[in-house]
Amino acid sequence: MISKLAIILSLSIPAVSFAEKKVPTKAPDAAPKDDVVALTNDPIVGKADRIDGDEAKNVVAFTFDDGPNPSTTPAVIDALQKYDIPATFFIVTQRITGKSGERSRELLQRELAAGFGIGSHSVTHPNLRAANARTLEKEIDGSIRTLAGQIGKPVGVFRAPYGALGPAGRARLKKLGLTEAFWSVDTLDWQAKNSERLRKKVRTMIVKQDGGVVLMHDVKPITAKIIADVFDDLEVENCARLAAKDPKKEPIIPVSIHYFLKDGKTARAIPEDVKKRTEAYKLALPGRCAKRPSPPVAPPTSPAPTPTPPTPAPPTPAESPRK
Image (cartoon, rainbow, N blue to C red; front, top):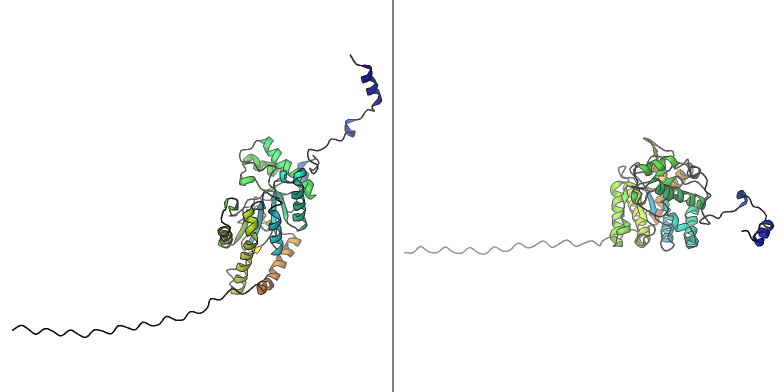
């Protein structure tokens, strides 16, 4: 039975239509739940064939996964800016949501302001190789909604955690118009223990392959520690190649992933602003090389003295025959 108080309250509260109700989103920084395809409609990097890293030579694209991390990502950004190197950051979007993600969101904005590329790396970093449709929607679509809302523009490139993506996942990317980004230089920095060994490994792999797409993780302290040295090693290599003037060994120019985009067998056109940045690096390289300290010269060694041949012993006189 309805009480008199309930009747009075129902008469005193004005009716509100569903359209007038404001339903808060789960995260204050999430994009509105509109058509995800509109949030991936990037004509520059979207809808291309999978990036494998072997599409171009004498260029190298650095990519960083799993961030942002306030403890380590700033050192990576600092090194990139010091050596004027482009990069793409693949974001795990649970890092940039909620109150705990405030500092990470600030780092994401810093990456944007510096002109770095931004791609999706899922919401929670699961293995998607055998993921069902519901999980794919949650991890791919969900990350796009959050990330596009944060950067204020479409997200056209996706990298699967662990590089693991099955047929259903690739079909999902194609439906959304997302370019899958793989790599050719797997530094395995996530399991490295020795920083000097990791540094040498990265340089060796880049030189051996004449560039490629480098996979590293801006959330790893060892990567933050050595990344500036990695870039310095690349500059040393390029300066040596310039000095040698060997047409078979051109400098390995750091570029963005635009140089690895293809539609079938056709390389995608490079945007003018990206071209200008690459040309500016090439033009500045001789000057950077000239300012580098000269490598230490080993002191000349004195020639070893020629050994004096031993004096032969006098012949032993023959014994007289017995009589």
